[in-house]
Structures are given as structure tokens and as C-alpha cells.
Length: 260
Ligand SMILES: [Zn+2]
Ligand SMILES: [Zn+2]
Image (spheres, helix red, strand yellow):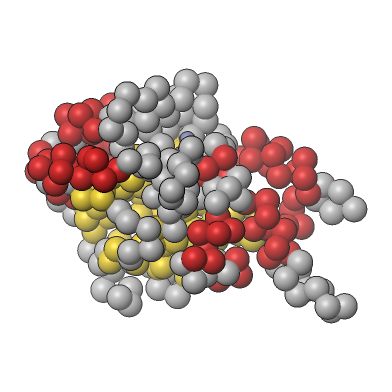
């Protein structure tokens, strides 16, 4: 699997694009979240909306979902020239988030005799289900109340024959999210939302270091930054954790069949 960070910034970033990623898995491209900066961040990384095969939405904050309506609309109307062939967007979503996501999109898309189902092909999953994508297993797990109290949210575990990658998305209460249950000797990377100052809804750097056992620190990739991230690079390097930079692809050999 190849992971391309379209952006690394938090919700209110001015310098960076929102913390959205493309996971290239075999011949498929999974978009991990679709924030309001998506239209610029995708273009900058050399992708168009039609390059995407599926989208996973972790939760409904604007830096994760604000660009989804435009994406599904643009894909739907892409072939307009008298011979319009609608392009439906496959959307992966946890069952707890689905009703709100549907409502959000329906408010904009249910008109002109169409409904959101004309634009989106939803795959609604529970914690117990596993989605197969090109030989890798995708597990979407509930993190409700772990990011913000009263907010439904979810994380993603990608499992392959050679390893696994954890992508919890925004989480403050790491213990409550019980992320350690996904970490084992096969874990290749943990993409961790990390705040370097106090934050009511994001994990602080010291909490991240305290939560994950030391032997896993070198697998942690900090992300979802504020604009002054350079100030904290020495701290990250000292702790032995990594950080992501926009458009620098990260190769994660989860499967021998995945081309690199
Ligand atoms: Zn966020
Ligand atoms: Zn959030």
C-alpha cells in the first residue's frame, strides 16, 4: 500500500491542507476523508476526483467531510455532454455515522427527482464487519465520544498478510478508544492525530507517548498539525516518532501482491 498525504493540517490550518489521504491499494485508490480543502489538495497532488475508487469518511467535522458533496456531484456530472453517464461514488461509512452523513448529503442532493442514492453507493459497516479491498482487509471501528463528547466518529484498521496499519482519525481519549487492541508485532504504522498544545478534542503529544508502549513509538506518524509544526520537530525526533509531510508518499508493504 502507498499512502499519499494530501494534507497534514488540522481543521483551522492556514498553511496546510486538511488531514486527508489517498491509500493506493493494488489498482484501487481509497480516499481517507474529504475536507473542505480537498479540491485544492487533490489537484496539487496530481489527482482528479475520478481517480478515486472509494471514499471513507471518519466523522462529520468539516476538515473530514466538507469536500464530499462537491466530490460526489462532480463525479456524478463528469460525463455531461448530452450523453450523461452518472458516476456513483462508493462511500464507506460506519453504521453509527451513516444516518447523519446521509442527512447531510440529502439536504443538498435530494432534489430534481434525484436522491443521495443516485450519487452515492453506501457501504455501511459495523465494528464486526471486514471489507476486502484488493486482498487487504479494512475494518472501520467506532470511536464515538473519544474525539468529542457526543460526536459519532470512527477509525480505520487496514490489515494485510504482511502487516497492519492503524488510522484512528481524530481521537483525544486514546484509552477509551482502546487503540492498543489493534497494535501488535505486525503493526507497520500508526497515523496519530497529535497536538503539541492543550486541545479539548485532540490527543496531546505527551498523552500519545504515554499511551503507546515505547517499543511502538518509532511506528507513530504524527499528523493533523497546527501551522507552527516546525517548532515541535526536535521534540518528535527526540521521542523517535515520525511525522508526515504533504505529498510525500509513505510505502507500507502490507501485502506481497501490492505493487510499490
Ligand atoms: Zn480533524
Ligand atoms: Zn474532528
